[in-house]
Image (cartoon, rainbow, N blue to C red; front, side, top):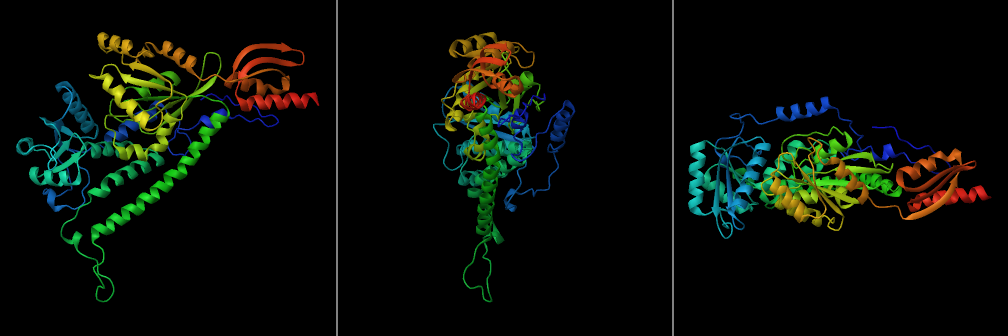
Length: 486
């Protein structure tokens, strides 16, 4: 990162590099400057933690365990097609397969049932349950993954019938997040989301439902073990919320400092695996981890960049979105998602090579609207133009008025996208005409970095500037002029 620190004068200290130097890994953590070697190490570490097929410490009979770790080795996928076309249903089950593979599992078979709505007892009909059980026996699968969020009763009933562990889409996504979270804040957010999901799904057998004795003779029924566990989880969730709230303060402080110094923020948002991190690397050389997997990066990365006319602005790589993003994650990651909702401009990256890019656009816009970013100006970056079908690109460019076809891998269209981003940056609103003494070069530098120069002239007494700047900088220049006149 360049050392672009302004000097300090009477009251102006703009240490932009310090303000921007955040990876948002932990709000209190320093920025980790990643190198290609560290990126390769991240990939090696992640691959080293993959589950090994055939190795398990869990009991074979799923009903004997009370609280079980999520185990994914060989899985059978199950989907319910309630609306849309057959192609929509197929794309949904393919995405579930990609999620399962990202979590480290091997997909053995996938089944889809056409229904008006999921069955209230078993998610799928009784006939399809038998078919799933047969597929489990035939393939040796140990887990059934359902493409939807199941109620506790549906999970319990379906497990009893198929005789193996059953998880839903939400649990699968939470497991991926738990594997990929690196920062203290990210880990705390994932743990909170997992506990919110797990709390209503606790179950117990045998001793777990027995009462705890108290006093000499017991003195009343006492708590069951499962009730004790619920209480402990609620206590832990309260502690995590407090920790996340404390970490959020530092993030908010850094964001407010950027606002005070009129540094525009551009959020790179989009569907998971659309190429957001690749685009950030292409624009800034950030060396953010890039992997052909869903939710490869969770922690937002903030990088400083400079426009053609010298204005400083930030680019923020955010967590990827997905269809039916679990509400527990949206709630837990609210402080992280604020990087999107508090930005000045959103670069919405869509995978042009995806079978249904318009569905990606719809899903991401829905989440952005939920977190309060629906009114922010949006530029559509249709990525992977080098491998996308030309007719798909033309259709998207026709539908989306402010869209640009790019390839973060080859660099195609990047220059045009950068010009569109720079032209869309918010303009400073205060017009100033001032002569700044040569010994206050820090103010001139600040005008160049955060303002818009209309004209600049060098006079014997100083630098004459006619520019548009932010309110705070305009006040500092005005105070300097008053001081010179005295």
